[in-house]
Amino acid sequence: MAVTLKASSLVKPSEPTWNGSLPLSEWDQIGIITHVPTIYFYKPTQDFLSPSHKIFRTLRDSLSLALVHFYPLAGRLRWIGGGRLVLDCNAIGVELIEAETESKLHHLGDFSPSPEFEPLIPSVNYNKPIHELPLLLVQLTKFSCGGISLSMSISHAVVDGQSALHFISEWARLARGEPLCAVPFLDRTVLRAGGPPRACPRFGHTQFDHPPLLVGQTTNDGERKKKTTVVAVLKLTKTQVERLKSKANEGRASESSRAYTRYEVITGHIWRSACKARGHVSEQPTMLGVCVDSRNRVQPPLPPKYFGNAVLDVVRGGDCPLRRANVKANWLRFK
Picture 1 (cartoon, rainbow, N blue to C red):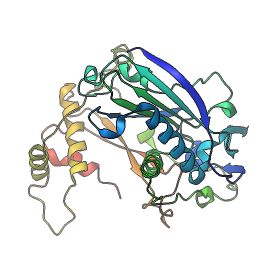
Picture 2: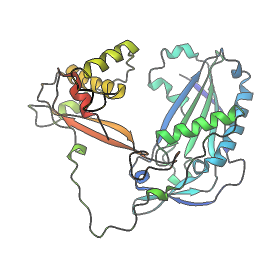
Picture 3: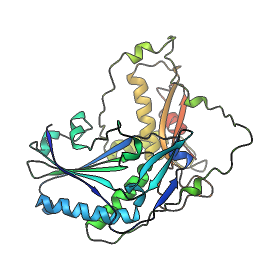
Picture 4: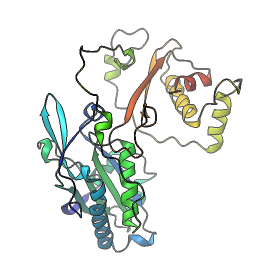
């Protein structure tokens, strides 16, 4: 897909914001420092999509308003030594890009993730020093059919998915002319670890080791040589999901514990199906990693609308039960 970039500018908060250095939590520090993309598509039948210059102006002005409340996104990261980062809230701004393409939305099919989307997503030049990289880049692309895409690349060192969605939701409200609904909680010192430990703690978490080898093999060289896994969208109907849920909860005493949720059942089913598709024997050790939001799981819970990283990777592992539908769902129960 050929995309032509028409204009690029830095959008700053519409009002003066706090200026200073914001320490990053340990959860921010251990994450990746690259940007995570998100893309939204809008069909041309919607009235608000015309004219395109008005849309761009509305997005720019509302983004400037949103940055008053989410001002860390207008700042920059900076190395401070020891492999650690700090967030300078200096209101340098967010990069906003206007682009267009001769392609039409229907050329994208069912919008399954595809490398074809890459020109629609703002790219980040990681050859530059980190203190010069915007934490948020936004690209508005107009299609020849009148549809548009709105994409964002946001630094994972600053926010997780929950916080990114919070920002996008509030930005959308401001773009519609509505007031802010939920102010972000920006004080990351609530996750401060305290003073340095008296001794270096060591915890054994074998579940985060390298993936287990296939039964009967001594290396994973053969697996490494295989082509990259193709990303696909699996569509499940409500009836199929309820059937899976009913099967997973068969024979369980209602008073023993709560029933398996849709998330647990679907994730367990995908895990089990992947084992079957790969032809694993029942003794094959397998692992599954999922992202868990810790905001309400830590004690005390984090303040509402905490803005930062609080989603952690959790890994479960075991053998490969190919027949019992409820075993995988049981392993996915996190407290």
